[in-house]
View 1 (cartoon, rainbow, N blue to C red):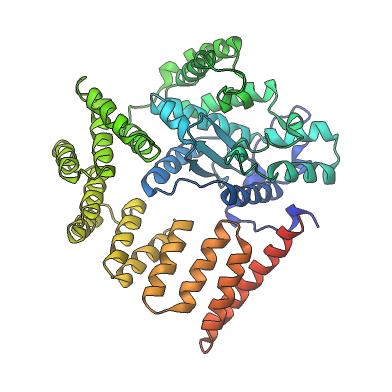
View 2 (cartoon, rainbow, N blue to C red):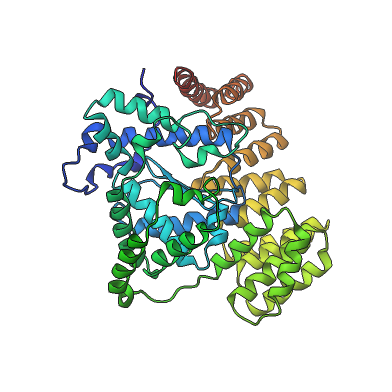
Amino acid sequence: MMLVTLLVWPTTYGHAAEIALPEIGDSAGALISPQQEYRIGQAFFWRLQQSVDLVDDPEVNHYIKSLGQRLVSNSDAPALPFKFFMVPDPRVNAFAAPGGFIGVNAGLLLTSQQEDELASVLAHEIAHVTQRHLLRSLEKQQQGSIPRAIALLSAALLAAVDPQAGVAALTVVQASGVQSQIDHTRAHEAEADNLGMLNLVRAGFNAQAMPTFFERLQQTSRFYNSNSVPEFLRTHPVTTSRIAEARGRAVTYTQRMGQRRDDLSFYLMREKLRVMTSTNLIGLKQHYTSALEKGNNRNTIASRYGFALALTAMGDYSRARKEVRALIEGDAERLTYQLALADIEKASGRLTKALNIYQANQRLYPNDYALSVKQAIALLQAHQPKRAARLLLTQLEVGKGSAQLYKLLAQAQGDLGQPSDAHGWLGEYYYSAGRFEQSEEQFKLAVKSAKGNQYQLAKLTSRLREVEAMKVLMEEL
C-alpha cells in the first residue's frame, strides 16, 4: 500500500489545483497530485519530529509563522496550507518539503542582519514549493513512472536519521542515496530567485536583501573547509554570476518598495533565540554589555532585551527586572516586554505578579497566542486548571491548534479530574508528532474513561479508529 493514498488531507488545501505552474513541458501535476504532495510532506514532518526537537517557544514560533504567512499571502499560491517551524540548530539553513512544510534553522535567523534577509530566504523556499521543484526534478529522472517516483520521493523524505548526527533530517533528503536525483537544478534555483524576489517586494521587503544575504554567505563560506560549508549553500549553490543576476533584478524593484514596517520584532526574536540556544551565558552577557555601549538604535534596544533574558537565565532577577522596565518605559504597549517581565516574576517565585501582568495584557491583546500559552502555563502552576483550559480551548476555536496546546490541555483536564478528556488531548498531542502507538494507547484510555457518556464515547471511538488506521499504514512503510 502506498504512503500517499491514506494520509490525512486537510480541506483547507481546496484551491491547490489552481496553482499556475510553468508551461515548459512540466507534468509534475500528473505525476503526483497536490493532495499526495501534501501527504508526503506531512509524513516527513511527523518523522522529523521524532528525530529532532523543534523550538517550542510560543513567541518565536508565532513570529516565524507570521512572517511566513505574510509572504505566502503575497505569493501566487496564497491558499496553500504552509506550515513554518523552527529548529534549534546553529547551522545556517532553511528547507522545504512538499506540501508547504518549511523549516528554519536558528542559525539562519541569527545570521540574518535584517528581517528582509530572513524574508528573502523564506520567499525563496516558498517559491520552491509553489513551483513544485522537487517533484519536477523527480519526474524528469523517473520519466513518468508514477509509482516508482512516489516510492522514491517518499523513501527519500522518510529516510532514517543518523542518531549521531541528530539533525541530519534537516536537509530533508540529503541523507538518502537518491539525493542527486532530487536536488534543485540551476533552472529551479533561478526560478525560485525570480519568484521569491517578486514575492518579497509584494510583501513590502527590500529586494536587495536576497543578493546581499547570498553574497555574505558566499564570502563567509571561504573560511570553511569542505565539510563545514553552510548547509544552505550545499543545497542552494550560490555563484558570483547568480548573485550578480539577482542584484540586477533587485534594482528594478527598489523603487517599488512598500511603506516601512515595524521590524523590531525581528531583532527581539533574534536575541531571544540567541539566549535560548546559547551554551555560554557568561560570554553572552559580556557581548550584550559591550553592545549596549554603542548607541541607541534598534540593535541596541534588542541587545538590552537580550541582556535581560540572559540575566533571567542566570538567575539575576533584580537586574533583569530593571532592564525590562527600562524597555517598557520607552514602549509600554509592546507585548514582548510585558511577557519578559512576567517571565522574570514567575522565575523569581512571584507567580501572582506574573498572573496579574498576563491578565492585564489579555485586555489589550485578547487571544494572542503567545500570551495565552504563557498565561495558561502560569495558571496551571497556580492550580487554576479551569481558567487555563478556557484560555487554551479559545485558542483552538480561533484556529491556533498546536502540539503545545494539546499537551497543556491534557494537563488541565487531568487536574480538573476529567480523565477521558485528559487522555484524549494527550492522544492528539502524540498524533500531531506522528507518534501513533502512544496516541493509540491514550485514545484507548480515553474511550475506557468515557463509559456512560455516549456522545463522548462515540467521538473518541471514531478518533481511535483513525489513529489505528494511521498506525498500521506507517508500520507498512
